[in-house]
Image (cartoon, rainbow, N blue to C red; front, side):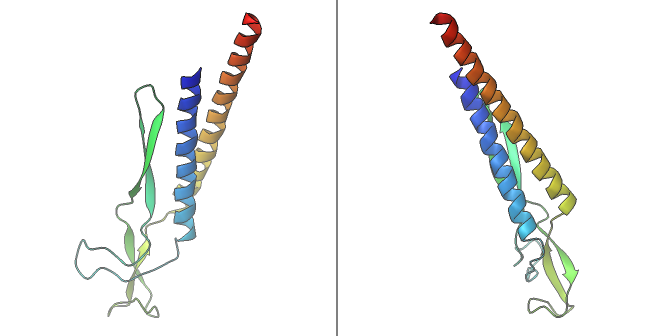
Length: 132
C-alpha cells in the first residue's frame, strides 16, 4: 500500500516539474539575446527546457530537466540591442502547440496519480474495516 502511494508521489512530482518547465518556456518565448560568437556556442537568449522522465524499476518515475536542442533559432530584429551586424538575434526554440500539449499531459498525469492515491487510500480503509 505504501509503495503505491510513493509511486504516485513520484508521478505527481514529475507532472509538477513538467508544468513548471512548460510555464517557464511559455513565459520566456519572446525574449531574445545575442547570437553566439562562434558556431555551437551559447546564445544570450533564454534556453528552453524539456522534462526527461524515466521509469525507476517498480519505484515510480524519475524526472529531470534537460536543455532543449537546438535551444534557439536566429530571427531578424535589427532594432534589438542584441542584434548582430546582419540584424539577427537568438530567439528561444519554443513551440506553443508543444507547450500546450505538455501542459495538458501534465494535468492528465496529475489527475491519474491523484486517482491512484485515492484508490490506495480506499483499499487501506477497506482493509482496516475488514480486520476491525
